[in-house]
Length: 65
Picture 1 (cartoon, rainbow, N blue to C red):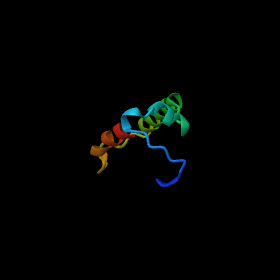
Picture 2 (picture 1 turned 90 degrees about the vertical axis):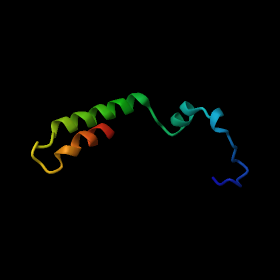
Picture 3 (picture 1 turned 180 degrees about the vertical axis):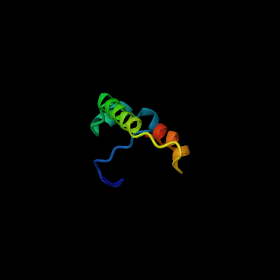
Picture 4 (picture 1 turned 60 degrees about the vertical axis):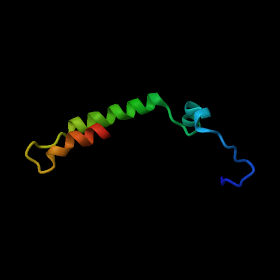
């Protein structure tokens, strides 16, 4: 939808209902928490070898996933 579309309705940032917006696009906090737990478990299961060239960055990668 473009800005010139008559259906477009401007909502100021301070009046935005963030929870409603996330729900409209299918976000579910419970499912997201479960997804993150699975990712953390997979990362822990496939821990890098300590002498690997990229071993120093693996903790950073896991923290941002």
